[in-house]
Length: 245
Image (cartoon, rainbow, N blue to C red; front, side, top):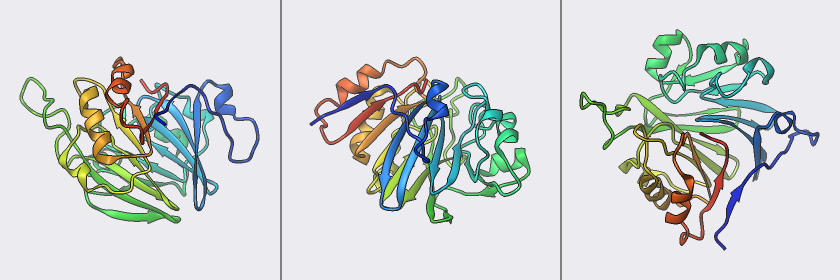
């Protein structure tokens, strides 16, 4: 049955009341063969995941959360160098001496540290397989004719937790390389104009990826109801609408 899920689903990896839920952040839980993933949807393109006692931050951004109150990161992933994805203030609050930082070459030039991954690179971190995949624009461009996101500069990431793969697309359109991504359980797809995808592009990407769970994210003022209409006959995809403007 086709499902659309709105609103708050709060969990804690320790089984205690969620401080994030009390702060108004939404959380979802995904079960894997190696334990549960708790995803805190902080807003915009920003996520935090808890898995196996580890904390993973993705594109931390100070405008959506007070990072001085969030747990230190075991792993940080940065998709690209734009200011709403590379935020030095947020990073300074969650980086510890043992934090592993994965990022693009342009991000590394700005920060002076971190492990650079290029499109196609693979690595692992404490049992989590990580693949960097392309993220770029084809149709949407600046007045100069340059794409808002240039091929080869940014990453999406596919993370494998036990038997589940999660795809964090970064800032991208429905690019041909998405056809190479197999067995995606959960996909985070951006949907804000003019920088990433239209609702139609996002629906096309979803049909290409065929995830069990789809989160439109980084969607700004885009009306998510149009995506729901476009995917209403795709009953195998569960669309979860969260506060991810």
